[in-house]
Length: 260
Length: 229
Image (cartoon, rainbow over all chains, first blue to last red; front, side):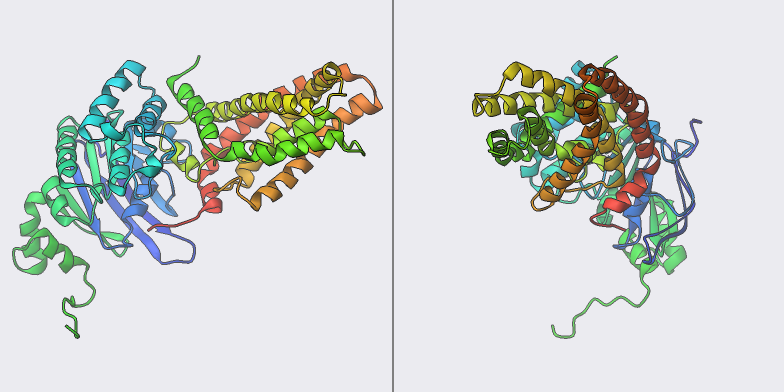
């Protein structure tokens, strides 16, 4: 793969679940290497679908999805060795303990046992899971489950990390640690792709941001250019949150209740 | 050569089974194993009852290999999986668990049937098992792709699964009855079993792996329990 080639590329992807509304309507999106890119959108906008298409868990009705310059097709399992995922719906064997699960994941990525041991010990420590290393994941709290998903996603040092709402349910201390780890990974050349409702987090964490609405990317810019973009779109310099609301609202926003 | 991922899968298969609820299916089945051979009408020889019990107990491991837990296939898809090896490991793990369960159920059943000639029974059991094992695994692999179930082994679905397994077992037992009952040439079971093993390894495992590689999305749609946008 070329050094400057896009790591993620969606080309005119369309997706509809059965007879439901069109979720992705000719969506195109490209993400370059070694960057932290954010994707924001309303509930049901299609963020999770984008990630599930990348993970091969669903496929678009038309259009192309490329990862590392290769089309995501049935049987393109080899690409997965370079990617780590944290999905909205946890996908792990919840009867395993945290350490056992990380050992399983390390094995699936063919990490040699000594290297796996070293990384597992450090990850359990950083993610504050060392005390509960033997507890079955089924007994974990939501935040702990999110942590173990993240830990499993990075154990093989992926070249692309895809995170769907990674900070949901995390306490501030661990969230802070994870942001640091993500920045470290991006500095080392890993591409990080994050979706989140927490616009403040996206604003602080990401190098660039895209807004999805109506099944399409309606805005994409560098994070440092958000205010300029707001001038262009809304006529005045605004925060990411205000820019986002301005872009996605279909009717004037209501922020008052008649009975209060 | 054994890979790290193979060892991880073997640990997952055996650990998952032992820590799940499926082994408890053997408790009620064990009573049937004790009852059937000593029943006045003597409906089955001891080894047939024992094998029937074990195979019913292992039904989800045979007919639904990709969903030992509700999200297993999806979870495995996130890794660089070699599906041929995964199918092979799952089938071989089932055989290993089956042999352990057979030994246990056989000893318990034998204890309650002191009149049975143990050596004769063991010989018959080994020939019968060899004959039915590989065709059943092949049928199970096919079923795992065609009719996957996220939740497996639960009551009352378990009764349906048991009935289906009994039918499958009956159909793959026909060659054994022909060979030993009609033709009365028991050693023919050995080449028949070898042919079954070859078909399982070279056809069923390869075909199931290819189906999972190419048709995973269709399988998920069929077994979908929730959707997200």
